Image (cartoon, one colour):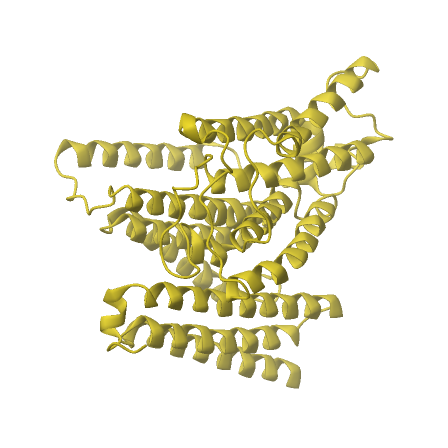
Length: 338
Length: 102
């Protein structure tokens, strides 16, 4: 990208991007109304993703666009819908006094500390001589995947478990009487309508892209989290289009899909420890097979967990999504993100 | 040389359509005409940009990916436009601004 771009044009583009990121962040914080703040937050995430691309961190850019802007955006939009249904989305008066300047000072403090850290820390060598030396023994060619699934796989294992814990937390919000109901709100779909058609066309393509992102992650930007987010979007679109109905929390296939990733991860660690290598110390010869197996299982679990987070807790049939013929609680917006 | 010039011309044309679509989004009076500006002009603009970038592609698979991106954006924009319009139809406030069009 930078190869064909002259220095001045690249600098201009970067400065414009920085200004846009700062503006989107300010607009998300300063504007009136929750919906407006969420929309600017999503724009902010996409602009930050462009910034990561400019820094050459394509893996981070993919994760930021898919999870930071896409998934978090959908979750926040669903929250806005929930607040409106509960009648709690009235415009709040602007915050004044200590309630305004204490968070502002805290934010400034964190920003100052980060700026200080940026100047104080040594510039990292890319990708680092130790990593360059170890990469050929990791089983994969993408250094990010090598770090996430081999050198520092502990962190990834714990992330997968944290994600599962978050979904359990969401389910805790369901009412006692609703526990056996399907997950999320009931969807109204016009048979043969636009959404029903979209729900038939998009999932096969999305499935292909999601699995490709997982497979490409071994040697190029991509991986379990990026692929899993695309697959989660496929699941949400299919459910919104009425192609399938969401299961209840006690459905065995759902629970199996949720624990498969962390389970395979932990199991691989245990087997490797029993074979004498140490917990999650991958032997060089089998590293690629083990990494792909863990990533495939993780992708499925991440996809189902993220879709579960978007759907929300189990809700009995009387909690239907209101609105017109087709839209629903997180309808048009969720469709756009997907 | 001619390839570069065509790329410049196509991306510039694409940007023009984006600007036109954005102007429509900001200036048009109601949801339905705003959707019209946004989906039609922007999709044409994206197609022009994709075509301009495709001329610079190193490999035919890159062209295929660009075509797929454009097709998916068209599909998503068309679907979302329908859904937003339907939601607006069921909202009396938006109908009033649109001059009670059915």
